Length: 116
Ligand SMILES: [Zn+2]
Image 1 (tube, rainbow, N blue to C red):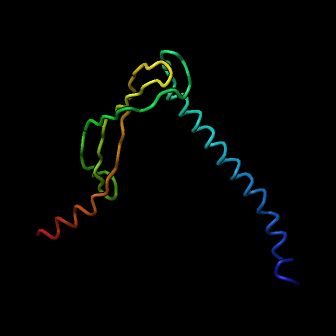
Image 2 (image 1 turned 30 degrees about the horizontal axis):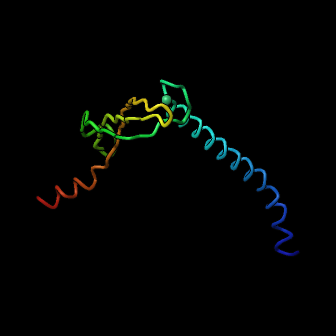
Image 3 (image 1 turned 135 degrees about the vertical axis):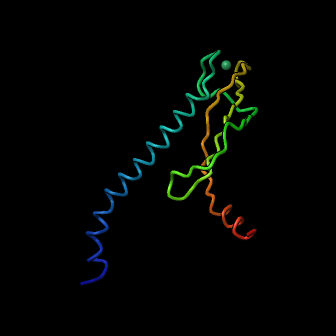
């Protein structure tokens, strides 16, 4: 039996899996695009995907070390404010969200050890 003959049914079985994955990725991409369009919708004229970020502000909310986790992690919380400007009517609005960034303290503890 030829190697390709053995692989053929395996390859056939892989096709639906690859197809399902491709459809999943396509749907996720579409959904993200739709979300982005809604986020950038102008509140004044109602046009979708009209906003362009003209400025981004970052404000530090907190910066602490979380010891509850197995590896203690520094958690940085920032408030991000995006300033949008409508491409059609020029209306300016802001949208803000909180960003939580866990930063590993492994490197920090190594620095501490070196200092000792
Ligand atoms: Zn507008």
